[in-house]
Image (cartoon, rainbow, N blue to C red; front, top):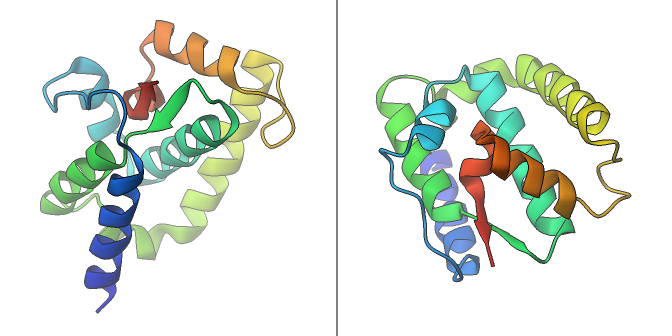
Length: 134
């Protein structure tokens, strides 16, 4: 049942992302995201979502998120393994958010994150794989 709910949620999110083109799974930036530890991966998903919500220039690539999650589940690092790592994910997400804020001089949830999203995209960071320019 949990797997069905996750797939339904991912498909719903995928329907929301209709602009731009999804990155190829072979893209080196996508591979950076794919190979991360489970806590780091989920921290990047959270930050990418927050950038897309804060900046009209970016959409969140829910289709790539779904594709990555399926591939990561096959190797034991997807949503199925995340349940047991919830505490580590929470800690890593907090650390990643603080680091992101310090690097870009922004406050997530209070500032426009377009410039930070642009910088992450130019850098080719793992989280930029999930940002689709509108």
